[in-house]
Length: 238
Image (cartoon, rainbow, N blue to C red; front, side, top):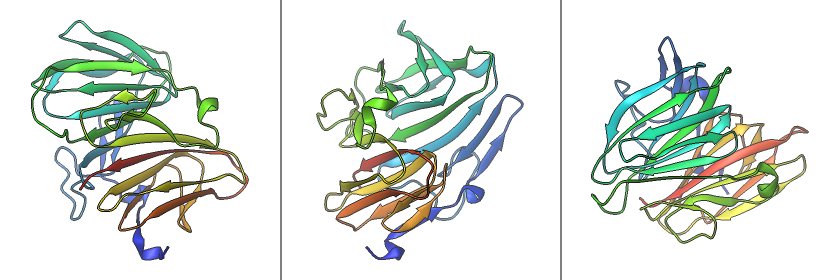
């Protein structure tokens, strides 16, 4: 694949929000940030890289008409919502919230250490619907050398369901590993290493940077160097 088919989003170029309890980097425009060319990627609208201080978090607030996938990189996040759902999601695991017609929720780090998450927002296929929340364990060793669907609206076995024609995959890779993902016609992909460096169609991407792809048939990911890597990949419609 030609190098110009991979749009690399360097970490130092991410919009940044710093609060007393939160250190957040935004792959796309979020809140007051309005950078040219950063208004999402297809139906992927938000990819936030959040570090939440111990015993702090997001107090009760609302969303609607959004599929919100939270991947816990380190620590744990505790969810509570107005529907009575409550749960703790550990590092390597995933929670999904279909906001639907409206949901009030809080997300807190109840741990004694910082929690680090990726929060991913995808536009739903249709507005409205009953709001829902769920979580699931995804042991990192179970996705060694293989892309595993973590959240999907495409019927992937074992994935948390979302209300969008989209999927978020995860893989852990050791030195020498490579994987290939086939991207359908008209689809958009966004790949972020949670740790380690990888080559994406020949272009080097470092941890917490982003690779935006479209108009390619295959996405080949290889570990760059001797250190293991962990990646997330979102495959979404335009």
